[in-house]
Length: 435
Image 1 (cartoon, helix red, strand yellow):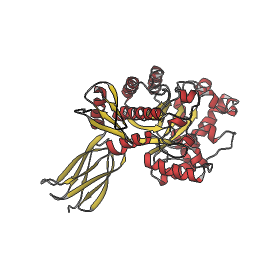
Image 2: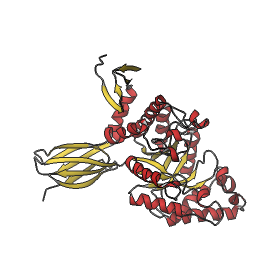
Image 3: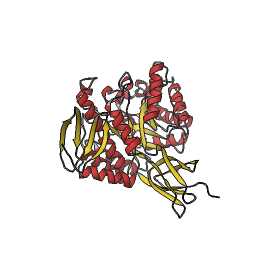
């Protein structure tokens, strides 16, 4: 079979995904190799354009004309992160798995979120017995490895996640205890967490508001800022990117902003879909939330998601075909999010079957063998969305390149310098070999 005007988009071992000049999905078998011939629609082409527009800036190198320039990307500015399991730092993970977890995390991610460590129920299950050890150890690891960490979460007002001893308090005692919780955590970790989820999933339930009134959310932000005036406080909720609870979330954000609540960003969970997700609904939801002019983080991503049969029926294995579909779902989801200018990051909610609430959504199996999603994911981040360039300085003494926002090593005739190309600035300049 001869196919004209096509190009390779990505590979999964022996499988190729090609872009075809047609608007349909077709398959063929050639020499025993299964080719998934995937036609990108106009929407896919638009995503590529948006990624180039919103995720690239200009890197300008000034040096002697004719000098050789090498530009190497070291990391993305955009957050490609993952939740960190308590077991990784609390001594319960076997040494061999811990070593693999460390290695694979740093290979794949540049940001992190506490999965359970900061949750009040996890830190203080019994009144007055506060466990800081897990949080301390997690922050020590992320600090050593230059991984920005978000704290999830200061409060969680869903009834089943509120400790019984809190429910027994009078309103005055409850308010004072809430204040002490925020001030203690944010002062202890002042400047170390990049951001916090303030009160998790308020669209779905808010024990604290039910008890103390609608002004409690603003009070929570005041207490958090008493401990750390620079703390960035995010909302976080689920079933938003499916569209199901988007109107309620939009209304809640408007109400909080009207009250003067200092919301630093909008968190949206990404695991309420099934085996697949609605592309148009995801894009619509992001467009809707973008009107608030606040950074959006996809805080908890899994595919297959919570509405899949894998989660509902506790299925822990996938067929090869299902694994390939998972890889495609993951890359499509990431493309849509990376192409959207309001999105500042996406964080998986687990990457290894040994520490993931939806095991089949992992990048790695329990024995650490990679799923097809690993190659698909890494091809996106470290090939398609990665800048490596070599060239010569022009006669006017400049070398310019369009590059993905992030950290770079620029080398001119053997002399190197690191530089940050930031989205907020749009361009960066480095001088090498000039007096």
